[in-house]
Length: 195
Image (tube, rainbow, N blue to C red; front, side):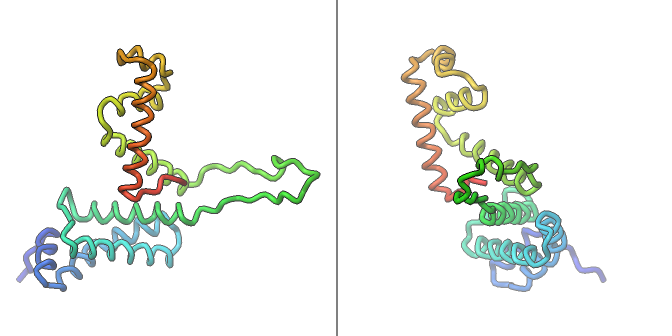
């Protein structure tokens, strides 16, 4: 006799009702996919173990706190958590190059070298751009419009003022408030937008 398939949502419900075995079933169901993705990106088994563990700790804490919202599939949510943890790891471990300033004879540019962006660097930058685009959607319409024209359409404030039928000072003010509001959103959401 075959055991009936229990959906992820049903398992989450059972876990929240006190059946801790349902969480184990849920983790075992998806661990191969999540772990494989993490390992593929970080290319280090110990680091992948840590990130995998952190991802499911975050899942458990979110489920327990009651803040989990079923906005799609459970696995997609877990993969997004894992992806964000990978991005956070790469941001935090980023090495900052230093130059020995005791060499008075040499030119600083003799010590610098150009490297192609790594996969990790591109992932971080893509995530930063996506985060900024998402934050812009929270801005009031006038501020969002000016910011998009200035930074995405590369328009001058004079052109923006003409296009939106306002004075240059008003366009500048809207841009200023857009940047202030973006900073507040970044702080409120506790985001890191640096590579």
